[in-house]
Length: 99
Image (cartoon, rainbow, N blue to C red; front, side, top):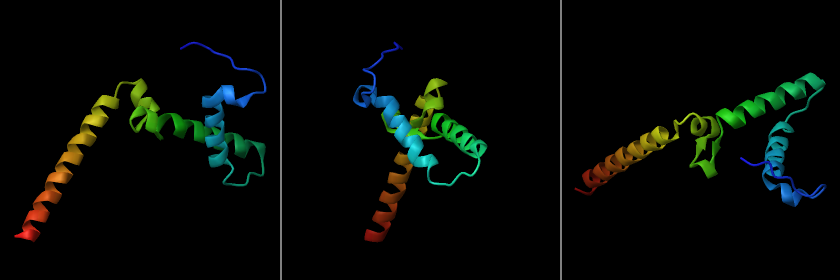
């Protein structure tokens, strides 16, 4: 990945990192923090959540860590299997009701 710098003091050229900051700010500022250490811990918790647990729409609703470690294809395959089974079960229930 190339390091590309945008114009200073021009947030529109820094879209991805600005969006990340907005997401973090919206999440972290839901609570009041009375000590700087509390805020630092909450930011650390958010970064851990964002990188390892949060589903990213641009990554087919898989967590970043799953894509990084190559688990994304297995997860998507399993989701499709579950969806197919659910649709089949609902179809059977519908036919039983209709009969």
